[in-house]
Amino acid sequence: MPANAKVSTVARPSPQKKVRKQQWFPPQHGAWAFIGLPIALGIVVAPWTPLLALTSICAIAAFPLSHFLTAIIRYPNKTRYVKPLILWAALSLPLALAVLIARPWLIWFGAFYLIALSLNIALARNKLERSLANDVIFIVECVALTPIMWAIGSGTGALAPTASNLSLAPASLWVTTFLAFLVLVDSTLHVKSLIRERNNPRYRTASRVWSIFSLIAALLLAALAGWPAFVIAIPFGYLIARSYVLNGKDLKPGVLGIVELGAILLLFAAVIVSGG
Image (cartoon, rainbow, N blue to C red; front, side, top):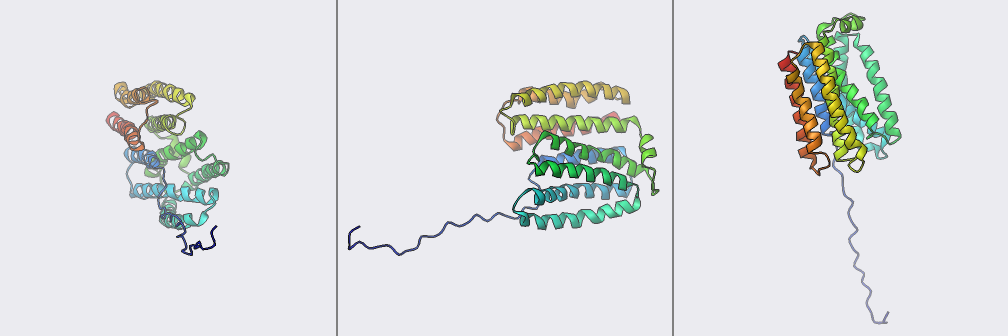
């Protein structure tokens, strides 16, 4: 360096760290529809009671509560999940307590959800929160809301009528519940085959096979409930068509979400038209 060269003493601005906004809602947008379908079906099939409204709000709030609880256990930056966890706990837990006081036998269903949540957390600890196994557990947690809401609507405040109430449930309740399970698993496989597992041909095959299987199973279930086969075939025929038309295509998540929401709405309409 020349002796007369000047050395710059101007400090360069240090790069600013990107400040993340506080997250109050889970980023899995499609999961809201997965929760909303069983709740809507439960309201349709259950004898009405104001407790169903409380149960619906509680179930919706329980999803972000479980998400942020899992996030605190799973991810290193735990402090950013504390505020939303407190918020959703403050909303969901009092509602859960109110419904539990009115229907004390719901404690058994609460035990079921604690076991399911523990499985979600165990999978998350092993970095498998996006696995198909965890997705199926979540779907089971969702569709269980339909018979639970029926039991709430037809039950009493006694401690032990859970089993007897569900044993007296009409076949249409179980048909509705299983149809929802078929659709939600179908949607999960299809979305995975287009996004997270788009390079895995087995998911594309599984998506199509499940869609065809779901149509056959749905028609058998419709016959069991005495529902018109052609009505129930509409949402499942839609699922088969979109699994072939869209499989392998590069779609924006918003467009893909609208397509999947169409299947959910078609099933809901089919259940109502069929007298579910």
